[in-house]
Amino acid sequence: MSNSFASSALVFDPSPFDPANASADALAVNAAILKRLENWDNWTRPPAVIREMRREGRGAFPAPILSPRATTLTIEGRHGPIGLRIIAPADPKGVYLHIHGGGWVLGTADGQDAWLERFADRAGMACVSVDYRLAPEFPYPHGPDDCEDAALWIAREAKARFGTDRLVIGGESAGAHLSAVTLLRLRDRHGIMPFRGANLHAGCYDLAMTPSARRWGTEKLVLTTRDIEMFVRHFLLRGGDVRDPDISPIHADLKGLPPALFTVGTRDLLADDSLFMAQRWAAAGNGAELEAYPAGCHVFIGFPGTNTDRCMARIEAFMAAACAD
Image 1 (tube, rainbow, N blue to C red):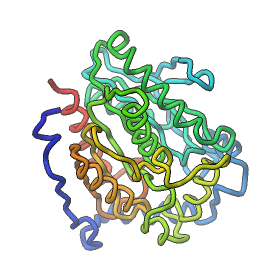
Image 2: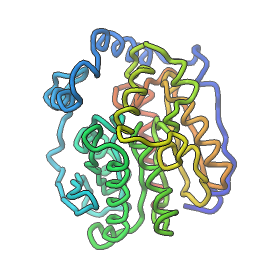
Image 3: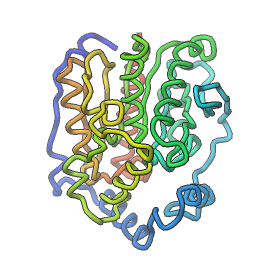
Image 4: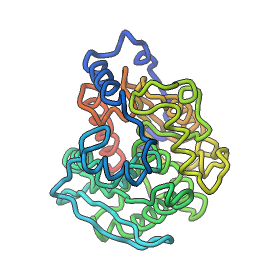
């Protein structure tokens, strides 16, 4: 990325937080989600059962649609094999290391094939999604360790396997959190920074919870305050200080990180995480862009609408710019 981007000041437009700017289709999406989740509770069954229900379409939302273009690869990590799911164009312009969301407890590497296909086709990215270990069976630090190991593998192997070493990292929700943690580990533990950009959508960067998460309450617009509390409890089953930068990256020294695009909806209980983290990212001297989307729910890009169309196009442009000469 250009030096002018990396040194530019963070500019933020607060107008999306005005309810008057919410589009009719965003409000309709939110109403449909609230209706669908009216009687759903993630915590009435063990996480393994919830994962299976989600995969079979018996969860809160339909089963994921798998891409026939996807291939899988297994690499060795410190805790054992790590699966990688790959969707790539014939001649990639860059490699996107994708880390999925799901509160460190749910989610799968194959749950976002539609997004990764789009990034492959429109941004020319070879997309590699990490099937990291999930809590509570594998609590902290297993998930971050797997993501760190996958990032080191990509840094070594991208040029030989994909013909390019232009790398971008990113993910959604817990995946954005793990992306930030991975970047910090690469800098601090290995003295490297192979990624040119970070795509951070609706991330959770403070596991003690920012004000928007603490004050959200019980409204089931994808997540509730209790959901965040339970996800953190499962992730830190064996303990951990929520002020530790390896757990809550908002507490880290953020110097020397790549340019980042922060995107979040204004009706996301984690909105403050992006607002706070983007400011700290920029204050540390890194390139940062922050865009909020009116009435967007948590990870709104998983639902159709004008917010999704605009945000996905913005992410694609960011990736393309990160991998440009």
